[in-house]
Image 1: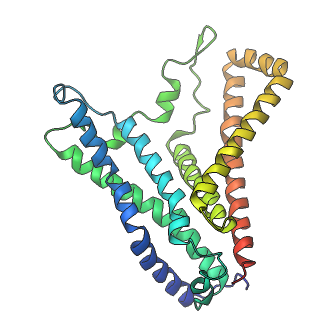
Image 2 (image 1 turned 120 degrees about the horizontal axis):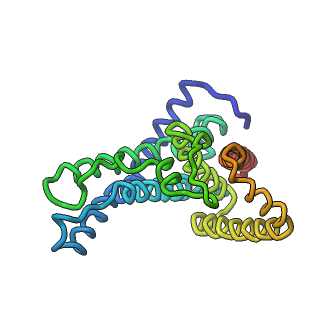
Length: 279
């Protein structure tokens, strides 16, 4: 019942879960990986006459990549570990010769790491092969799109002042951290939903997430209405690059810290639910 870990036992659980993930989630993963091929085909279909001059921007493909990875981590828990908390159907999970901690960390490893890494690698490999073709809308490599820093700075102006100070930008490393945390944020929510609900786990987790977003949006609007004068006065001080840089850093890294906190909380709640599950 504890969270102890024996390396050999844990390795066997990982191998077992790997086979289960391949068997139960392999087709879904293949569809996610090949979605780029579908996007490429749609581009060919809707732009048959301008195809020599028309390209699909790498930024568009990056957004599709991110969406498909997030979809993969949202679906994986309810498909691969659907029975982990069910009284009768979960007997196989309870009877595995490993501690619940080992089984839980194997679940975390596959849902947080293996699924998004395989989805990203497969999608990018497909995209590279399509880019190598001498025809079609993919002319640039997927990583050649504008960085988020460039997108943010573009032609951004505060009042009459064009922004020159970009010290607040997270840079490539910071953007990578934010991207990974975004994927883990979604994964942790749906792993928790998988241990919380008994049926229709993906749908109920998705509905719960939308309700939570709705409630947080209402709370944000209320806060803005209450403190609108203070917020407006602070925004007016953004003509000073130093103040603007300070506030942007606070906003970005505050959001990053909050995401990390939610990931840790949902992971702990998932473990707590699984540890107390009755079979």
